[in-house]
Image 1 (tube, rainbow, N blue to C red):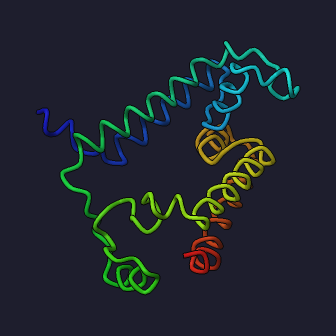
Image 2: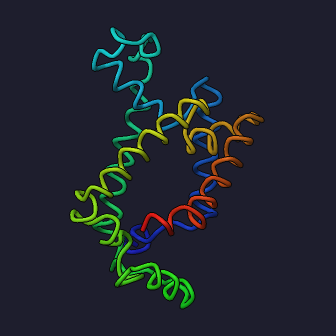
Length: 186
């Protein structure tokens, strides 16, 4: 029984659970999104003294901070207790493409050392990618009025057209990044 619980849940179980959470949030008048937690944490830290954007009742958003705690704990629990090994079942074409891009052990781990290892992150190029990427993500999230999870899960479930447009833009941006920009950065 415990072994069945510790396996990843299929879409037909996790999908309806997400729908129930969204229904509950809709009925209680709350919106879900990870980027709003950063605003809450900055407000808790006193950023409201420097910018009006952070002046709001952050105590009303403490429930959403539990989402961050749950995501961190859930990710840790899943990686430590629900994963037998870190190998990924990639197609042969994907392995060949990744090796051509410079990845030594394509499919051996979820986080390739060439991108996520300390040597890559602490290099000048790695630091610039982190800084510029972070600024672009922060700007885009603020400009779009939320992050991918907020728009894709909460916004679309509330039938908000701007969220649908934002999600389409996120996917187009991801495709452009993956196929046209990322190969030149690696």
